[in-house]
Each structure stands twice: as C-alpha cells, then as structure tokens.
Amino acid sequence: MICAFKRDNALCEPDPGATAPRQYACRSGCGNTVRTDTHARQLRERADEIDQLAASAPGPLGQRLRANADRLRETADAHDTTAQTAEALT
Ligand code: SF4
Image 1 (cartoon, helix red, strand yellow):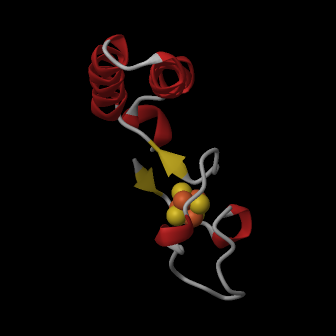
Image 2 (cartoon, protein in one colour):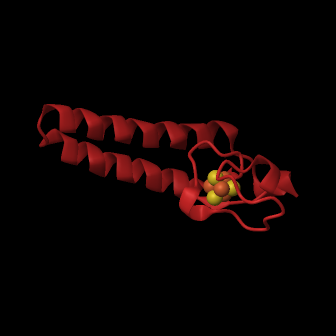
C-alpha cells in the first residue's frame, strides 16, 4: 500500500499542519490509501497462504484466519472495482 498523504482526510490523526502521516497509526479504510495491481495480487496470494494455515488450525483460530483471508480478498476486490489507470490520473 502507498500513502498519498493529504492531511485533511487522513485517518491517522496527524497534528495540525503536519506534512507527513503518522504511519504507526495507519488505519484501514483511509482515503489516502493507494494500491497497485501488484498490491492486489499480493493480497490474494497472502489470503491463499492464510487459508492453508486455517485448514490445519483448530475451530476458532481457523475461523479467524479465514476471516482475515476474506478481508484481504475484499480489499483486493475493492481495488479491482475502483482501479484507475495511471493515464486517467494524469
Ligand atoms: S491513515 Fe494510513 S493511509 Fe491514511 S494518511 Fe495515515 S498513514 Fe496514510
């Protein structure tokens, strides 16, 4: 993920006048987030790895791992449905 920092809509609550994000406080769903197609592919690959771990994990742990994998796929799907070409952004 890439942070295209704009202070006014940053969810990491930067100080007034800040020119950089508080990356340690990065929050999911921030509108400053930018992903490439490669990032989306990597999210799906990681989701597949997590599902493999889940297959051998006991009940609640396996469920939690599958839920994490599902969230990664949802993020990748959101990228695919909202992605714009570099040409469209310039
Ligand atoms: S919440 Fe994350 S993506 Fe958003 S401005 Fe802060 S560091 Fe960047």
